[in-house]
Length: 68
Image (cartoon, rainbow, N blue to C red; front, side, top):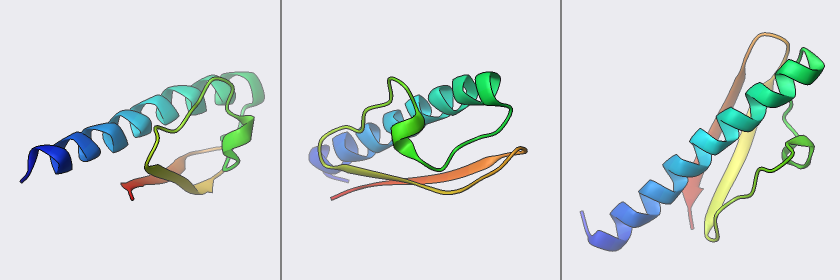
């Protein structure tokens, strides 16, 4: 794996960890997870990373991140 690819994967992984933290904070305040990234105070995607929340409800959320 090339250095650039590892760096891209690391940014995507970091964004998912940051998303999880933001989702937990949102859940603590609202008793439900959100699929709308704009609702997650403080969450910012890294340049070149695409983050999507594919599902979110009162029990769990699912998200994916990829680099472009």
